[in-house]
Image 1 (spheres, rainbow, N blue to C red):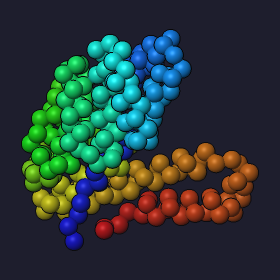
Image 2: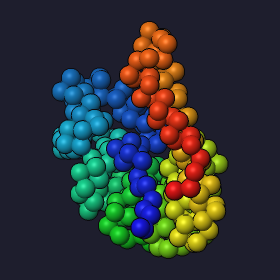
Image 3: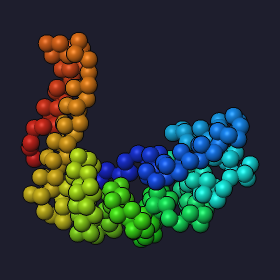
Image 4: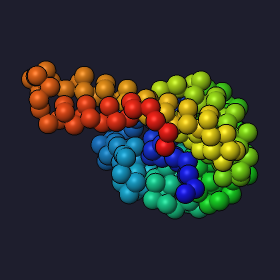
Length: 243
């Protein structure tokens, strides 16, 4: 059975910190300009792709934004199109966003995701390169560039990128899993097993943290169904064994 890497980690949340700060600035500007426009802004920032596209389109049609704000709006609408699987329109919008603000790494990241979905791995890697150049600690860009290298069967380069992603976020199970896939395809099964087990442990830690957040009354005597099920999940993932 051919092992497949885990792909994008929630494409609707690809907006980086700097992009988020720009959105906050845009929001502050909109508040002073009318409730209907605030509603469009809220929709433009929605996690629902249809609402996002509609809100961003309305703002662009109004043609009352600064260049920086228009870049943010195009970038957000591009994420909406990406989430709907309309990769050509996502690329068109991120191209516009980059033209208006070439210094925002999340625009290149979204563009890279879209090109990767279209199977243009070389162009995707170019976009991830630029995202990383602008933000050298952009974990997700390393992760997805590593995935693109896996798709190109360049496993050593994939492992290098996933090594960096793990350095930046050692608690992300997907980083270990996909590095394990790269090692598997190289035939280095020992390291692959180590990575798959580390991915299990990372997942177990996350679920254990979820248990700790349950109300004490829920977990009293550890007899509740919720706690027993969660404990079973943690123990299952903690069991270190070859796949």
